[in-house]
Image 1: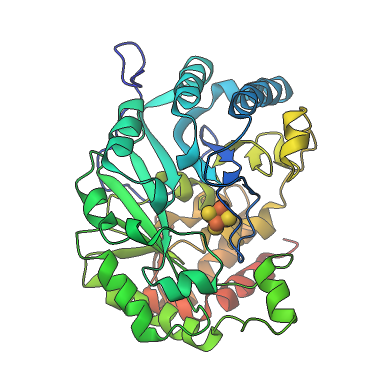
Image 2: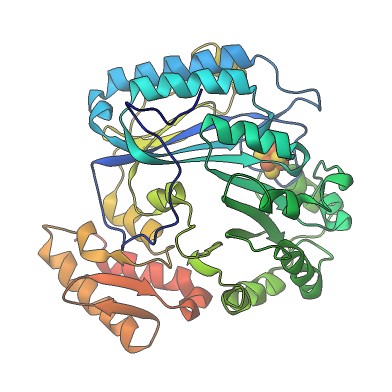
Length: 406
Ligand code: SF4
């Protein structure tokens, strides 16, 4: 099935530059959580089940449950049907292990159930082991127009250090295969601060990534997440914690290093050639609604936020959350929008609250005077400058305290 049809088109997003973001309540993204991986990486805090190389089990049941959950969410909040969906993001887990026939029929179901914009971004997360030219053509034919590959490092030593399953033969040609693929909007993820990894090692990973022009790069610092094998290994003295000093140094230097390649920081960990930002993820940080389906998935719809249990077996029995909680806007807004290095209209987040608008105007004007951001008081358009990254958490806390209880 092609998602482009005469009647209802869902097609490739052109790399047009977006205008500044603002708070919108009429558009949304759709997140699908595919919970299977070959094996669980030591550092990973996402909900996933390692099912071995031979693929995921119970895919038919899983896709049926996605449909049931969607129907239930619509029953809980019928105005979901009024939203215009602008993105679909299939994350995980390892969605590149999906049964593509099931995926195709599920996309068809979505197309006939929800209202999609004629230009919809459809992103799929993939692992290097699944990337090959026929696969890229297949998913492209299904309508996937953006792919993100979790490479993490090109260096075996560091992949082993974070207990990641990998097939070394897949890594040498991967950038060329992606570059030659029919999917123009592709990106990769890298991790830095792995014990033993030097700054030079990480720069080598970046250089390898950029052997072919790259449209999108996510660079994540390794973190010690509670409950992971990596965290237990640290407590038991089997592994070193992440190198935080190096992480701070790299975080600070990345914007200028990547600017040489035309990659612009648009969020703390994300860089893109302008126009190639991930629209779906921009929606999260801009506080758009997003409907999320699958075990462990958390969503945000008009009725509130919800989180499904991180348990595949419960999910397959139809046990997903029906508990919705309205977010505390004054707490959540700063934590989300100030992660963006992309321009946004800060006034749109506090419309109707003149007291907060005044506080906002004064505080961000003081940041602008310190050359931390650009800010136009007449339009409300705000954008961090890259130097703000060093103390971003501090500025977010300053803003949150200033508007607290107003
Ligand atoms: S492949 Fe990705 S989702 Fe799966 S365990 Fe590793 S980091 Fe987590």
